[in-house]
Image 1 (cartoon, rainbow, N blue to C red):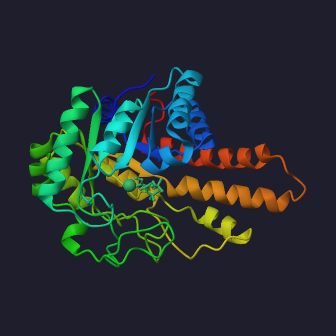
Image 2 (image 1 turned 60 degrees about the horizontal axis):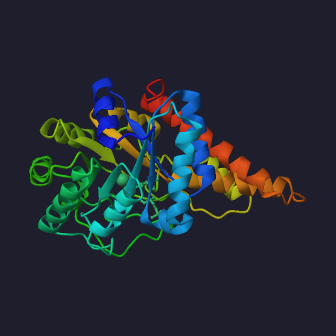
Image 3 (image 1 turned 90 degrees about the vertical axis):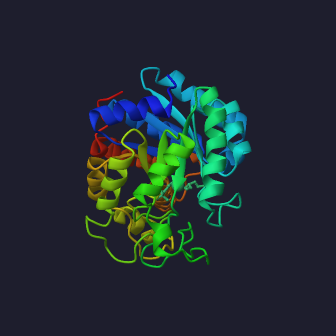
Amino acid sequence: AMITLRELMDYAAEHGFGMPAFNVNNMEQVRAIMRAADACDSPVILQGSAGARKYAGEPMLRHMVEAATEMYPHIPVVMHQDHGSDVGVCLRAIQSGFTSVMMDGSLEADMKTPASYEYNAGITAEVVKIAHAGGVSVEGELGCLGSLETGKMGEEDGHGSDEELDHSQLLTDPEEAAQFVKDTNVDCLAVAVGTSHGAYKFTSKPSDDVLKIDQIAKIHARIPDTHIVMHGSSSVPEEWLDIINNYGGDMGATYGVPVEAIVEGIKHGVRKVNIDTDLRMASTGAIRKHLQENPSNFDPRKFYNAAENAMMEICKARFEAFGCAGHA
Ligand code: G3H
Ligand code: 13P
Ligand code: NA
Ligand code: ZN
């Protein structure tokens, strides 16, 4: 059954666990997450970007989620808009049946330029008003995600953007977070605490204390009723990086956020943990490996299934590690 993000986050806070929120674009991703949730007896957050709706087509994405709830009626599912860039994107998600939307006003509508506090609070408050009127939850974002090593925002290809952020933008200020919640009434708040988007987060192996745990704890103490979201939370599994590169791929050396560090974050108030890159890598690695090992195969179901199984294993591991297993 579909539930809102607010309902799931309130329950998670009460029980002290965290929830992975996986990005979905296609059937195999949806199936991988649902099969893992079924195996672990976990609730689910599926999130779709505007790009996902464009990729699959709005009706296809909507019906895939509906199919997921029909196949697994006992599993609570949140359907969340990831990184809404303006009011229209959020409104279209709501019209599509999403039970939660993210209005990412930390960046201007181009999703590149860091926005002013006034722009962010204003547009987020506008979305909250519309969404709450329809019983839909809202996630906002305060602070800009970027590498604390380079000051650059992460990008999938590892080149990063040219925009250099200063250190203060890269860490969410607890006092400003409290003001933002007051000004907007968001249900959840994405914060900058040391993570960045994409596969190229860290150039050397990070220690387990790579997250700014003090910052998380301080933010949590200031906004205890607003649930903390951590974007850029892929762990960039070394084994999948090796498989990709050993089977014809060419990804550079890179490190993600260790699962142990995320678990520590959850202990200090992180509630929703956004993961996209890990499933992309498992999928790509499994398909490369399958095709190289089975050169005569031309039935796509075989390699799609390999991808689905690889993604499912990662989902299971995150459900177990973050403590949501057994809470469906
Ligand atoms: O943070 C962004 C997510 O990884 C979604 O990426 O916009 O390419 O679908 P996308
Ligand atoms: P990763 O790139 O670390 O998977 O982060 C995904 C994300 O934050 C989606 O909103
Ligand atoms: Na999101
Ligand atoms: Zn994100």
